[in-house]
Amino acid sequence: MAVSILDVAKRANVSISTVSRVVNRSELVNAKTRARVETAINELGYRPNAFARGLMLRRSEIVGLVLPDLHGEFYSEIIRGANIQARESGYNLVVFSARDRDDSQPLLNAIQRRTLLDGIAVMVSELTDRTQEVLAQVPMPVVVLDGDVNGGPHDNVVINQREGAVALMRHVVHACGARRMLFIGGLETNVDTIARYEACRQVLAEIGRDIDPADVFHLDYEYETAYNLGTQRISDWIGDGNCVFAANDEMAAGILAAANAAGIAVPQQLAVVGFDDTRVARMTHPPLTTVRVPMSRMGASAIELLCERIGDMERPPRRVSLSPELVIRESCGHALRV
Image (cartoon, rainbow, N blue to C red; front, side):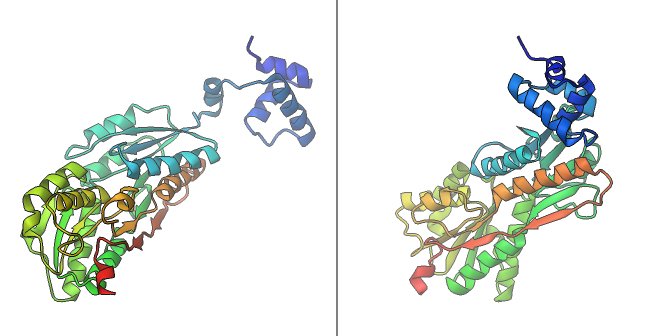
């Protein structure tokens, strides 16, 4: 038979309301009484009814995390960091995906169906005016990941994409001798693709060069599509000083696989670099030069901000910017020039 709050009250010789205050961490209970109630709870194995407790507190103690996808190490690391932080903050985490693409309605629908959440962290890949309108309609605390809404009503966590991509590009240009860049990104409207492509153009401009529009490809961040592109085009990309900058490690791995299948030596005949530093970057042949993104920390920071916002709805919005780190391995050709 389940232990009730009345059983705890009788064991501790206090009222039901006193037990409730202890369970809900009220400051109105003195230390001696609190210790007696907690002892009774432990001895009886009492577990509060989460639903009833939520009604009393007007909180569910559940927060949500919305991602564009749940597949792959990039997202799993964000989830891992978010879950650890949620537990440390006394919350449970629920995770779901909502692909936005050109229409923000799926994102809005996905959020509005989660009305029992105390707050929600949302990663947006396409930060359009419509997406910002959608986020403004959400009737709960919101933290935005990856989309820079500085000056808006929401807290947000961003990776300094440009800083990482500029460091990578300066390395391949100055340390590896790259002169012709081929850029493979996601959709043209994707916020990460935009930042990484602009960094590519910036560093090329520093040495008086630009990227040929014919050398720019917009895919979907997937290994298979990059591999298919590579099998069709890679023979045209071979050359001393030529380098493929893939906007994530999955696509870079696809290009490396296509090169290996075609008998093209990387980096001797073509350099390849990626972004994110997921595990695949260490498993390719050769290992991939890339930019390490603090994925787990990104998820943790988003939930930390969210819990702070739930506790203080009046504080000004905060923006947390995380710095990536250049990771040099063999695929860029640096070792050939040392």
